[in-house]
Image 1: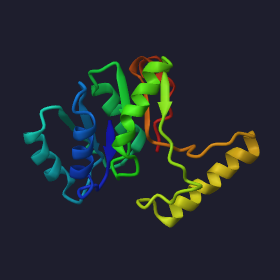
Image 2: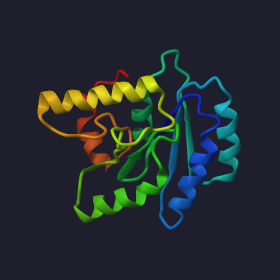
Image 3: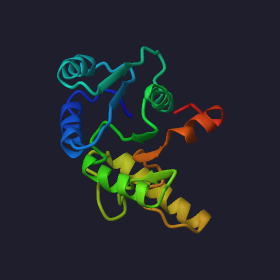
Length: 174
């Protein structure tokens, strides 16, 4: 499930990387477009004609919402496992097989792919978002005594049954 908003330039590259990385696996790509205004819709419709396992959800809502976009993708997913990643190339698809391997090896319910935001500057993150992430990392460390490198990661793999069991408890704003 890949929620997007105005990612016209990134979508083709992201999808091609996913196709290359997962060519030996059975999967679907669900792009949830949150009313993009940059021509993403046209790009997605063109790609849909070429890629049989690409599913697209166009949210025509006046209020954009990342969590609701994810929920819409979860609802449409036909598989027992769901992977979520950002559509802006912050998360490299080359790590998906490692996440799947950890998921299967340790029989996990949830696996999180984390960027090392302390050591590495993520090129697609603005200075503001990079700084905000750094502050959140230090906040977690100070208040909870736990070290983390990416507490707000949008790159994760989980069992769909976890979502189904807990969907009424979700805070679907933002």
